[in-house]
Length: 114
Length: 114
Image (cartoon, rainbow over all chains, first blue to last red; front, side, top):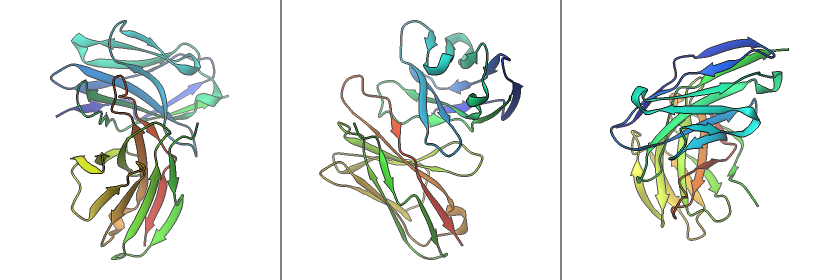
């Protein structure tokens, strides 16, 4: 079975600060990895995804994530956050070649103060 | 290009009642998954429908059932509602073809059981 752990449940930053949200997964095979974002009052949106190839993945809005296979990690980063990045962030994993049913982490609530 | 649409957006039901939630997948998608998102938690997988059949099911009781129609739209039914069923119910769609293993979410249906 696959599982996802997001260690930071609540993060509070000031604008222009750097962001790194941790995500570790448990799965015995090849994985597909995702970060989704849920802005207040909006639906879950895909930020970025990793299927294969370059382990450093660029997403929308200046976000990036690095897949480190040896650490079973897929941390999300942004060099300089904005107030508009205030949202809930979810890491998800599913075994590649499967039925495309990602397992989600509990989520990290990010608040950015202007 | 229409995204995933869900109805109703909000509803209130009484314990013991039954509820039906509806979902239309993103254009071109043939697979629908349903998730339950309790407050402060990540989405939990309920089940997935493909070719009008339930392909996979998460750890949810038989009170949760579903259906997929020939036009790929789907319904989620919950019988004998409990207070603990109060949550945001998310529909997600995807395409089972090659490279289609990214799911897209609707805005969800907020269910309150009183």
